[in-house]
Image (cartoon, rainbow, N blue to C red; front, side, top):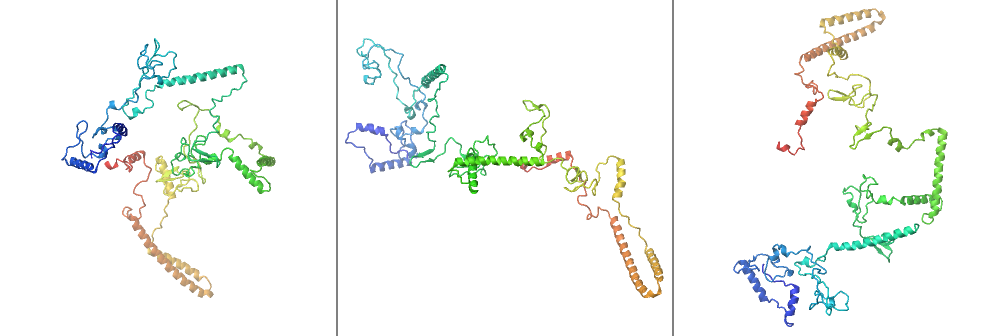
Length: 574
């Protein structure tokens, strides 16, 4: 759709309207003309008709859309063209920084009147009705000789839209220097007048009304406010745009809450920043600063006084309330001081009250430390830094060492009692069960420790086995002794003796049975001792196949080199 209806500029229509007769009207395209244009366009797209040609003789692609091929109305194209879509040359872009000469042309002096010049001054560049000079007694037209300069004519042949409407065209910024110098002269004259006035009368008061810019500040409305004189209210419709928005003080969503309807943020958005450094500490900070706290305490005092029967009101009688509050505070202080002196007189200890404040006690010291510019200590000893956030050298439960001062067999404990139970009570120096020194000092020490260990860990001795004949003889000897003891009592107790004999016989049988069971158990134990521990893993202790000890520095370094690192991004390429 490269060929469309040409849009004629409005200025061109107005100019052409004068040339046409008043009776003629602009011709409109008929339906037949529209149909022919449509058929021509379709023929060009099909390739049966030649394409449209621009002013440079180039063919225009008929498939180009109309909104690209049609030139804007202000371009002033006379026919089909695509020049407005091509980059413009530099000579056609115009120059906004181009300065045309202004004022009088002093390079040439005119001494004779020229035909068509101004009759008043003699310049050719304007007429008599446009002359800005005073009317002369003898006009230049009738004078014998004149001295006049022509003005520079401004070239209005603008290339483009911006150059034609440049309001600062041909302006020289150096001209503004004249205005500045004029104001400086006025200020200097004012200063001289003030100095002379003070010199003549030193006690005179000089009012700087003109220089006081804040004189009428109270009468000016705040930007963003609207004062309605009928309703006597101030409507705040916009915030001051120079201020930072409150919700931008801290972008953390969990920080102080911001109410968008009322544009209020009551809490402090940055509580970690000190109050003296914070630019905005919340609206509650402003609310509880100045006289607001005094007002709140006065209101509270009025309520309490009214509750106790005193007829006083904050708004109705503010002076009375203030006097009552001052009197109450004075009596309160007197009562506190009297109770304090009474307690000191009764119990003593006045010397403890005469202590300097904590700020002096904690902030001052007699230790002198001198630092260099780089921060290094030149003289004195620097204060040691805290090595840990936990309390050090704190002994609990009768211990003389801390937990972790003793290490053995992969466990931590107390060195004073060698106990592996944390928070246990210290019972003195004792070696725990299964404890053995890993590094003996010498062979003599090892020799001395062996008998002690044997005495401490002594195994109860098993009595040697006796044959069954010895057991029978022992039982028979016991029975004979018991029979002899039984014969001694008198004959009257024969019935009782017979019952005792039966009981003793049963006891003998039970002893024999116990002895046999004990022999079988001993035999089984000896068989189990003969079996080596390597074959019987059921009774082997857990982690007893290797020695448990603290790792060395070499082992730790090797482990650090070989340990896998899951966060390493290059791990999958190794």
